[in-house]
Image 1 (cartoon, rainbow, N blue to C red):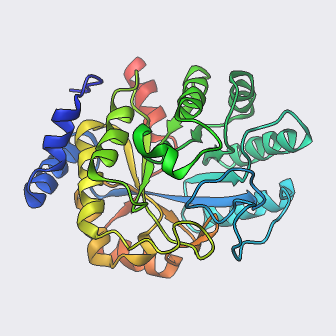
Image 2: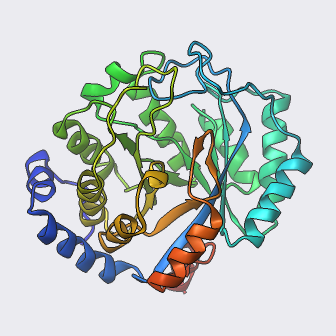
Length: 327
């Protein structure tokens, strides 16, 4: 049963279940709602890099931090289309374009992004964007251009949020999610662990997502990849058991969502990733970079898919299910 009335106490109890029992419970829920051998392969491309005015403590693209990230203006549509076609040929069925903006502005750059969305949607790939804050009118324009999903992560709990970001509020993030949902665009929203938050903050973020009027269709679970020059450069690596608790709890309380094993995969062994799939993760990002941080190469991922007998999930599968149900 899909619930939107979870309590903090219920989620805390799930999160703190003995880890092997937790994985078993999550794997059971996963098999009730998904094909356990199916994992979606996604590609994330930074179409505009660096120079961001925000102060997100984890992000090397913030203009105020001194990192190795070089500022690049918005890519040309033709270049993005070439990258999308390469991603499709490599097996990706979802293509996400990220721009290091605080918010979307109604200008020529946004018009160019709309052209990118139109072009990639014609490739029969799920098109996703992450562009910062978004108004309802802008969301409607993206929807009309063919956007399938919009990513806007909560990052952490509302209580810990101010320790990580001061240049926009938690309310701003939730308003953008509302604007995306009201435009009938698929919502992609999750967070990052390993930023110095407490267990209660991880639970708080999951509580916020699971009690939205409608669960996000996608929930990315990221492990911090510390970048030199950012305030979080000295954070210790999170253990696989912490990732497993997040993934398994997300799977149990948001059973139909795609739980995306996102940043931090480069620091995990194949065995650790296999446990994450067992616990309910059913999506990865392919390619050697996630925006600006490293990611496993395609050869390693192909070997993993072969060894674990995983098969790629096709595009628009959830949409096809909805159409079939309506008929």
